[in-house]
Length: 307
Image 1 (cartoon, one colour):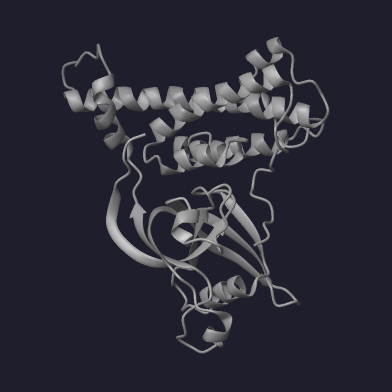
Image 2 (cartoon, one colour):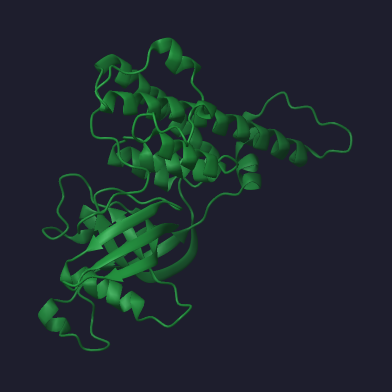
């Protein structure tokens, strides 16, 4: 993975640590019940119309507890903002909220929260939730990716009327489409095999699995195992969006937090998809070898998450 470069823009944002990272464009519902996060939602809801109502989601390192060590040591250093879309107050004072993944950022410093007693509900008092100084991370555009990967494109002829840069960009974009198609089909096979095994079956026969493509997943197929119809619908939504596909795969596949963090930190869609192609092949091999799914298949929006 190449070293991620930030935009240089720094900002202080609220922080919400979770067990797994959030990805741009992915829906994240939350059941907010802890007092400090109730305050977070209340503070964001009270912002003037047009102000960004967002907080940063960062994954907690395995085996660490944010409350017992310095927060910066317990958290991964790349996260993603969650943009508030729906806020539903509950009778107990909590909230049901729906957020969507927004921009990626690098964690530069974590600001300690004030105690509840110290806050006291006073306007302008320090919040009781974590905040962080972050640097926004940019996504490499197709032209930048093509320029960065040009050294790997050999044997490309420059035809009359086309500059070398134009040819490299066209070839790179074409190869990105092929790579996205490959990942889409691998992901379809992976989800189908996991769904069958999660339903108590022994997985799909080898010949069926190898021949299966994303086109074989039908959203309206009520007879399909749980999860397949949802996956088919989401795959169609990102059918022409390689970046969206890469984040969909990263959020749904049963990967380790470390694998997901690696994918989140990657700035180029092409390289992210190339990593996912290797990861999906690895996971399919493990499924066939071990004959078991390590954890339950998540639904294709992050489930309601206690905090």
